[in-house]
Amino acid sequence: MSRRQEKVNELIRDVLSEVVQREIKDPRIGFLSVTGVEVAPDLSSAKVFVSVMGDETQQKDALATLQRAKGFLRSALAQRVRTLRHIPELIFKLDTSLQKGMRVFELLEQVKREEAVRKSPVDDGGSPAPDGEAESLGSDGGEKPEATPAPMAKID
Image 1 (tube, one colour):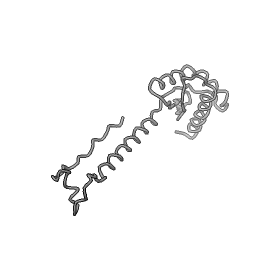
Image 2 (cartoon, one colour):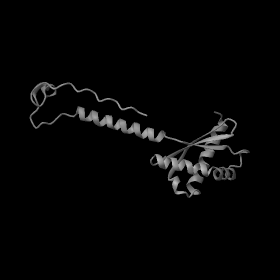
Image 3 (cartoon, rainbow, N blue to C red):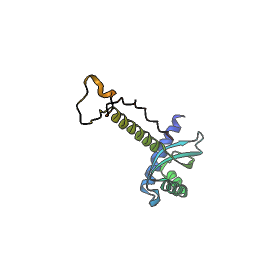
Image 4 (cartoon, rainbow, N blue to C red):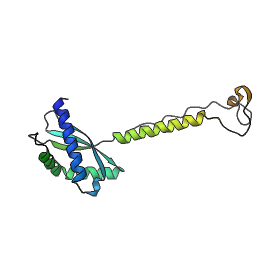
């Protein structure tokens, strides 16, 4: 990607973020952020990645509202960006990277909690057995079976 494309990406992202936050008053937009823009090499089109907080129906409503406001957004972009001769066609895409990142974080926290539970000694109210026998004996005095690791959750 050329330096010019990178600058145009940043410029379009900043301007669209401002217009969406300040000038679009539709409540279906909700909590929407423009997370990135990728313009085509010939600057004829731009993929605009947006993140919407909420469930799937709120995300679909916000994307549909942006699609309907596409003409308004292009004209607002043209008024604010005088350096571009041609304003690219806007293509809105849902950016799910934040949700995927949150899911990975939740899974890591879950693994951390499970490991802490496995490593913490079981307090059965008795005194600790000498020479580390507490680890090999169960609460009834018999040998306790070895713990098997929990299966890993699939990340979408």
